[in-house]
Amino acid sequence: LLNQIELAPPDKILGLTEAFNRDPNPDKVNLTVGIYKDNSGKVTTLPAIARAQRIIDHHDVLNRNLSYLPIKGGKDYADSVKNFLYDESCAPSAKSAGYQNTPNYGKDLLANNRISFTQTLSGTGALAICAKFLSLFVSKKVFIPNFSWANHKNIFSSNGFKEFKNYSYYDAKTGQLTVDQWLKDLRAQVSADSSKEPSCIILHACCHNPTGLDPTREDWDKIIDTINELKMIPIIDMAYQGMESGDLIKDAYVLRKCIDPKYVCDNGIFLCQSFAKNMGLYGERVGSLSIVSPSNAPPTVKEAVDSQLKRIIRSIYSSPPGYGSRVANLVLTDPELKQQWGKDVQNMVARLQGIRNDLAGNLDWSAVNDSQQHGMFFFTGFPLKTVQKLRDEYSIYLTDDGRLSLSGINDSNIEYVSDTFKTIRQE
Ligand code: LMR
Image (cartoon, rainbow, N blue to C red; front, side, top):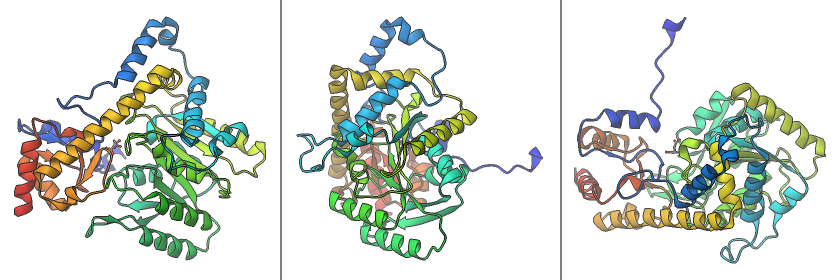
């Protein structure tokens, strides 16, 4: 049977680094994966994380305890992450004034014990467990934006989902979001669906991957109203909290909005969250999945959800790794480290914005100059054949959709990248 297996296609993002590594051109530039590099091209450890690591190294007990974590991860991590997500990120703060004028609904969720929480293997792991849970108990249908992260469909189809629909997100001709069309698509497709099974919808909380364009606050209000009216199940993918505005709290707007008790959400709210980017903990795989039970659900619902999450996780990887979550927990609970973390996020965002501005300065090109894009990526709008040409003839690697990871650009390659883009645009 093994000789009947077909070759799987290379991964649309990580597979490109394999191709990059094989490329002998000394001028090659890897702008594929969403990973933050400094101006010398290195993936450095954020100062807050490095300090947390030093503290942990000094505490033999913490560091040497290599025993298993519980199936859903440690209690300390769960408490500090839930507190960060549902209290701090949902609280009106002076800094975020104007973005949040609602009461702290997240704190109510915590007080009423409505959140089933589990540590996960970063955002991908959270999405996979979320998909497995939903497909087993709630729905096998999901709406994904067009465009979206290349791995979304892969994760959901590998975890039991059967029906995939797209909603309009981005108009390649104008380079703008298509929120009205998005809502029309949802209304048309959901109302044409006569089955009882509800539809899930993936929402990028901020720094939409790959376009870097997010709806305004007013647009989000309309979007969440529509999702609620259509009784859809929100799956919030929050992999870039802080990387949009440099303010971790501000960037959690979609979460704050979704948990507003005026929304019924009979089938729960699903939050898939990651510290890969905002803490730079990529390889440590640190994230979480939380499932918010409906307000009218008896406590037995949360208990049942918790128990099923455990069963799913136990059958796949048993329990999560410990070290990265100890680092994250320390950063979230130590006030000085927490403050430093906020600065680290701001510094990353400032450098990314600087690169975007430098590119705009070098290229007389409206796609960069007029762009409202933010976050780790720049969406060039290049068609596939241009992306391939950049790879084959110039050894500049973008993802197939024309996405470019900004921090891969630095002083030593910005001229080469800009000149090549100018040349290729003239051809
Ligand atoms: C990306 O989009 O490049 C990142 O989310 C990394 C990944 O796992 O694909």
